[in-house]
Length: 241
Picture 1 (cartoon, one colour):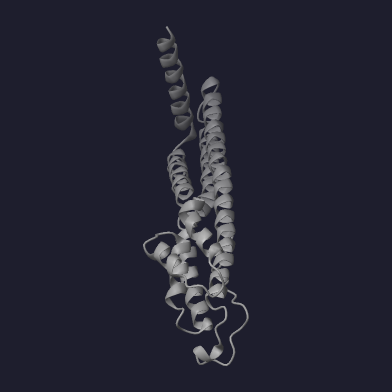
Picture 2 (picture 1 turned 135 degrees about the horizontal axis):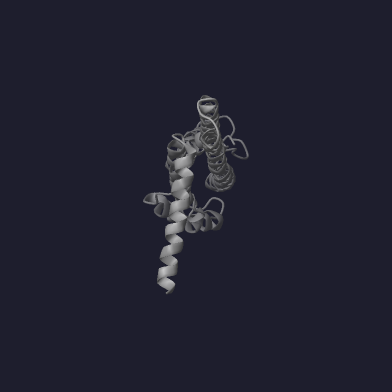
């Protein structure tokens, strides 16, 4: 009894969805492709941008535990084979400790820009979908109106009224579907962009702390430079919203 009711309800929902697409016209299929791509990208970005994958707690704790002037040997072992963004940036900083602080900062900045590109991977797709989904819906609406006006006067009575109703349904279905794709995609794009920005600031803070601790107490004569600055500013590029 319950199984039969569930099957009947499922069949009814499927028929409603298929009818919605059938009345929406040709442009419903590009919109469906946009929705599938949008959901896939948001799922993949959600998995890739987990805090523990970008900034492993073990590496964060080791950087915070490291005392000024202490050898970063333990940290070097932690980041050696770690695939996270923080580990790759810290690895570059540790590899350039023999050189001047300014060269180390420059190398870290270069690596940080590369990591930002990796973290933002896929967000451009969401941004494109936010722009084109409403436009595809608008094209579908215009297409529906074209059908309405093209059938006006070709028939009379109930048939003419039916053609007008179908054309309006196509216009409204495509518009609604386009907006229903654009809105959640915009939410996802904004959320992930903000998350990347926040993590970039946190990584900047940790890398600045690491460099300051590693260069603590070193005289500028060690590197043949005039005078080392008291602190190192290692700005990690923030993404454009």
